[in-house]
Length: 370
Image (cartoon, rainbow, N blue to C red; front, side, top):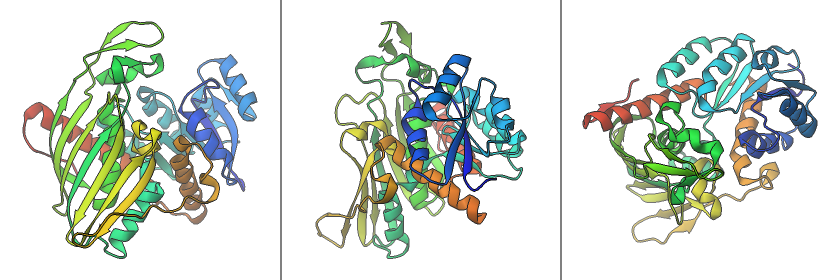
């Protein structure tokens, strides 16, 4: 690997998309990285993306991108059903891999990916919310200063604006099909619950209900009405490996005041992570987050949010936590560490979601597979 980490992005659409909104601004802000290759499904768009983003190479074949000697890290930002095949190609080429979350469409695919990704290299899943400054500060206060004492419970409310008013853009319509593994449960549920677990430990058992409260959606661009098969509401109670009770209500279609709130109650105090401002409706992974604390009986809430400094402060909100994940990855690569959210982390979250689905289907409390 050269002095700079050379990146090839699969799914670098020049007009729109998560790569354009989040990954490219993040990479531009970090001197450790250099964008050398882009890939899209059409030659014209690949060449236009290479010109627009300053990459030397344009591909329509993901395998050729992964095998190119000028690429150290393959970044996968396409629709979820394509993730497994693209990850395999990148791992087979011996490259480091950063795959967006959800890691794959199903848990079985994730298990197969983790098995093949045992090869050398760092393999990262885009569960970036745990690197937000408010979350990191909360973890420090809980571990180092025991701000809350012993954790008694965790209460979560997370509502996204996606699908509000029964309408959705064409590019997102595929997420309303349960079989594509990219709906509310997988994206909002996965990001939110992974953040909770980063603070209080892994969920080991869950009892859950899933519901579809908006069974039809209208495509913005065409007016077409489509059926929705992916749940838009999750009600959950669960327990961590240390016995901490967790309750959560996560849903889409919030017309007003979409937001996330994670409240950690303890024997000595409470901490609250809450999304702030208009970005709150997008989900915890791409929201401005504040940290509030109250330490001691009857004490008022204090704002404990860390001040935003450094190269991340001026980035678009969707890009900030992605940039932090890239920064952590570069540090891991330089020091031969494995502190980034790995494919194994992603597999665990997939297993949590599977336990939720089983519980919703059976009406029973279910154990999360170890």
